[in-house]
Length: 170
Ligand code: FEO
Image 1 (spheres, protein in one colour):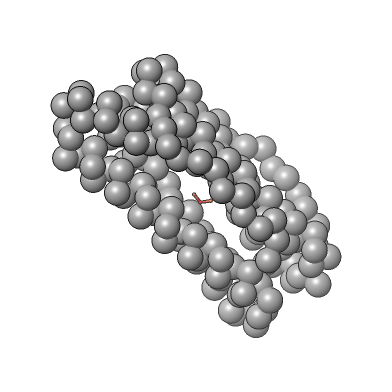
Image 2: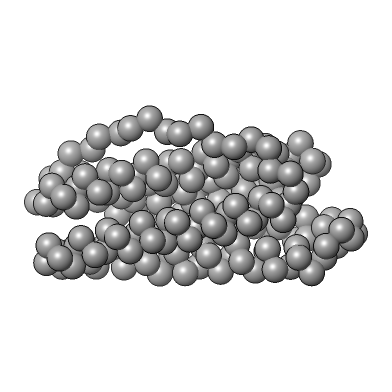
């Protein structure tokens, strides 16, 4: 049985993951409006990943005999100014999610919940990748600057990203 403190914190985290899905869906729409379909594809995959992160938590709470309480999802921004700005927001947001995941791990450690620690380690590792991915694209966009041919080349590269399903729980 999951302890109530951790259960409540994971319910809050589910909301953050679903908000992340919303944010990246909003970015997906913005990039599509700029005719940058490869960037839009990258954001589409990112949104699908966030949904999978939320569902992995969702299934875990149920598996450990806990209670799910879904909250309203905040409205995301819808105008991102430039690809660089969108990826600055993405990197900043992933940093926020990382600290939130670390907070869950702190609770699991203080509550001596070894099963939760094992479960949460997947998210700790995933966040390293999430931040690295956004950071790499942001760095490349900064190198490209205003050169449209560089942005279009990146657009073709980001069109290659595909969704890789994750294990639903554990
Ligand atoms: Fe669910 Fe992008 O972290």
